[in-house]
Length: 255
Length: 277
Image 1 (cartoon, chains in turn purple, orange):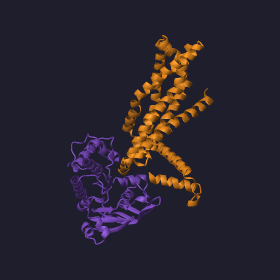
Image 2 (cartoon, each protein chain N blue to C red):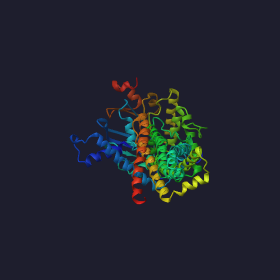
Image 3 (tube, each protein chain N blue to C red):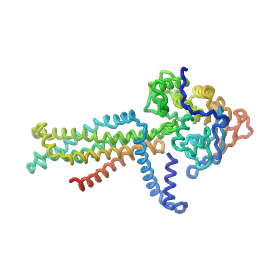
Image 4 (spheres, rainbow over the protein chains, first blue to last red):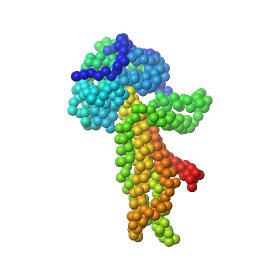
């Protein structure tokens, strides 16, 4: 893989909990989406969050990167209270947290290489040669090659997901947030993406929150699972524990 | 984005002393005031980000190419037809008074002072305004703007500042181009019924033009370009109604920017009448 470039020179090697969500509340008008949600994410852990559509899963991870402001509660990410961070502080933190959008959110007016170079704009300590190296490294990590000059519209669904992952990984994040990473993919590609997520966790030692409805993906990736109901945590445990749950509602996710 | 809008909306309610739910002001007025406050914040942020490094020169050049160079054919064709039609239609009236020789001067003053800048701005309001509005709205819908934010970059500087600045810089250039092509159209119009040389036509046309005709006209095109860029970007950036919102953003951008062109034109005419004419 060649020389590696340190994107976060001031990394602190925290141990234990990397994300602490406490009593989180969020409403949109009269719709109370999150009602006092509390979850911890441990270092190196893959936490899968399940729940019916509209149960607040995506709102939860968007709160973690400051795209949505919660009404109440506290959010601590990598030791930073994100609700008290200013714009610059938030941007610095965002560069340590990767976010894979459900749609991929690729910049469709840019080539694959330009997509990957975009997150590096603020990394002033990296020269152009090193940037290109990082692009190649990121594409190699997700198994994409010979697509550097293609436009996102020329890629298949699976390749677009991989590219979205590569763009996120280029900043070498300590935490990954996946918003339905396998939605819209065929079972084989879905499995490949799930396995890729596991490889990322092992290679980059990331901690991840994975929002998914895909139980095959959950089975492959989850170290621990949380099921949301009415804006609260309804059940928590490993995949096997929840699968064998006697609670009919919990069990219905696995049937 | 929703967070800022919610905060602004709440502040307006509080500022008016209407904190209780029973004291709500009409929702249309509330929406209007929220929109005005949001637009004011958007404009303020534009100026802050404009002067704050780093500068996005590459994107500025790319947008200038799209807004300026790619608009040249449309602006040129429209300008030529406009100059020709204006000349052909004005000629009979002047001929009745035996004042045909005044045609080049009259056409040049009309084009440079008023018709050139306004027509160019209206063409750009349609072409550039709709394009920016739809592009940014679809970027919002497909979460591309959110993706830029979560990568720690500054989408406002990259997307908004470059487009608004390009529109501001390109409008005066497009207007000068339109003016020149319109005059050539006018020359063609004059030569349908007569035989006027290039040098005689332009000699007479420029003889009646003064600095006070050209400068205010160019200054107002800067404001035209700024308002087209800013309004179109605002509509696209804050679009939030899915794919329907993309069409709405493009449509509203064209309507508002066209209206703004006329309002600015009226204000500039009033101001220049006070101080110059």
